[in-house]
Image (cartoon, rainbow, N blue to C red; front, side, top):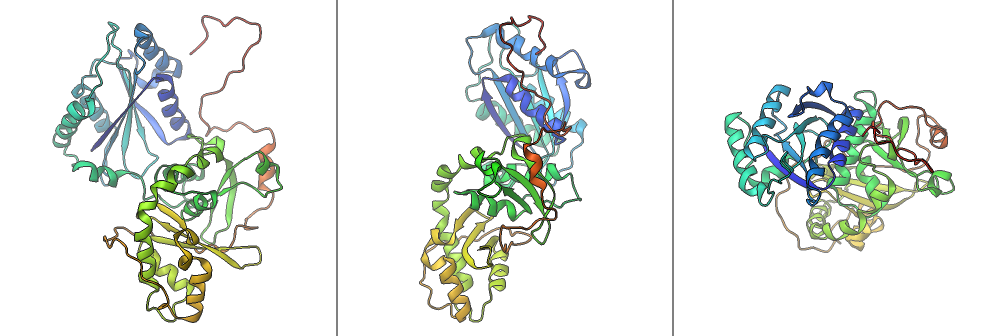
Length: 421
């Protein structure tokens, strides 16, 4: 088991986050402690009111909200009752047994986990000290619970890295709830992969049968910086209707995608040389190697090779998605010899010996991907034309959307003291 504690100043925000997952069907509330009612009887306003009553007792404390995540190994099968007991014992172990807290079971990743929301302000207005709570109390409690409930042990930070949802289920239209599948993939890609452009971001999500679409450059959607997500079938053809990015919890809109570019540019640098070495290892002394064989070889190393084509079918670029380090590189970013022109010349000539050797870290790569994407182009592939026109029409009610609504401001009217939270 891996425990992670985040602190903040908005208890309402933490509740809204978990309730939005409930509305999407990717989470369920399983326990309410110290609320006086069962979890099924509580409404959103009851949950918020209980916590805000405490936080108002000591307004000087700015950090008054805790969001705790307890992550379990993907191979573990845990009943709701067992998760409830683990949640209660964990909160008691870190000194929050007498505090009100909510427990949500999340099912949006490949491993079972629960989220716990609470506050460190007590009923007597004093606060629970959070300094070193993770190192001193949480770690000790975590290890005790692993023994008590016979859980798979997390051996340091290495185990935590394995639990992070990087191995994303490929979306298959008709097999699972389409919107949920898209959400799972997009959320994990934004969190884990290092891309520096929209095309690189799309290269990753496409490798999991999802496409991010801004529309054509002369469209209203493109001008308004809109973004939609669709599922692709195994032939790379869009199926079903697209979903607005703003309709997903986490809001994976264009602005959020773009905010990752600069930071990822630095993060991926350390992994460039190892990727170069793997590519060279597959090209060197490989006479007669075809483009399809190169894709298959790299796939076995955990790398998706994507040939980028224009409308006329001419290959103008290569993109490498390294699923081991979660890094994305265009061929030209790795160097001239990894660009589309150079690699295609080598493949056409059947002579890979002209490549120059590159020093690289020969650390063994772990894990492979189930398939690899040889994408032809991004134009005109759809199972039904005209799906995008609905995006700028008045939306119909969607039961999959989060329950929170933005209230319109009332002009020249005093707010009622009895307004629901």
